[in-house]
Length: 518
Image 1: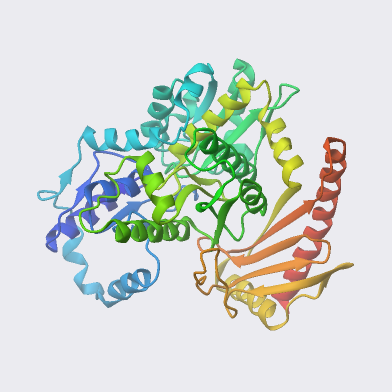
Image 2 (image 1 turned 60 degrees about the vertical axis):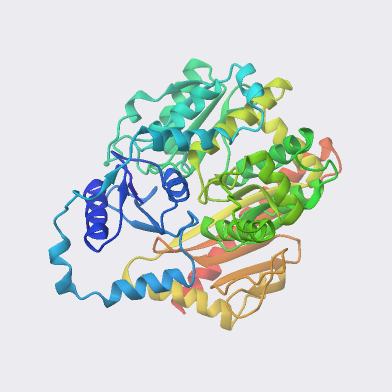
């Protein structure tokens, strides 16, 4: 199963891959045009193919393109399959490539509208309470930022009863992404046109997806009536809390919680996810960075249930409500998964972050908040009052070229060889090296080794450090937390966290740049 987005040469690369697969004796499926990454993930499972590919560079600059490989569970490949694929690629001599550079689609199957209908039916399951959405009269502005989101996000929202206004200048496919500096919904500039349209039209919220529609960014109205952007960590916290509440309300999980239901997050995502899960009495799983690791946990839960049910059990054919019951009885029911980089997945019918479904999830949350007479920021404050205040920050340090790669490696190596002892007046109380130490998740499963460091400070703050897998940079993820006894304490807690985090950010960056040059 091979899909592609709107980028330069994406269709050509897709057809070449499909042609090559059939010429080597396999059976290949493609779509009739651009489709989202989550639809590829779903379609691998729907067609029961052995693997999948999507030609995309996600939210990267226009000149980039890429090749993302998926295994038969619909998730991006992890070890040992990733290493096996690379080994096979490296074994192919350059002289053998030429004969495959002309596409022959005679034996390639192009999927019809039934493939879209099947995915849209699953995307619609992202809403837990469909009546709530239909009654809310919710009005949103949506932008696909010239990408594939209009193919699936638009029909998903409109079918649910959401009144959607699309940003006309950004609706058409365009590999140049001409109206933005970067087609990344994490960046405020990418949502600027949508926010301006929503301010003018008085819409409830803004929703945006990146070019392959696996990430979502949002803006919501505050009590003053102004639109404000939310971070990926904030959106993830809101969705986690709301969905657990709703599952309890509808009786899908016990009101007191259960260790047989979980939310899954990553080590570089806000610790507020853990606090929310603990308050609700559900299990919280933390994985390495990337949705492939979240998907790996879901795959394990699926296999455990299949083993308990015996031969003939069809996981995907089992109705979602019944599957939830069986998973709690024999395995673990996945409630929600998120990572800080604007990725969210409502259920396990597919195995990658889903911007299309995320838009519907967030629309439902907005509808629920609206029904209570609140704003979304006020609901977020309710979560802070229960769990404490959490604030996050990111440091991206770019080093280009071979010399830059050496500097990034030097920072990572010196962290391991000579861990930081303090930042300014704040001492380090714990240094965790995921490349050398053994760590286990809440299921007792060992976390794979990776060059990831977690640093805990004496004031309760913490940060994570890792090299980027896709860009020439090193990233630091900063986490602040302050206790909150009541609503009157919240403004002071927010101010203190921001000031302390700003000071800490400067100290961490200065230390990293010094290490890079040492």
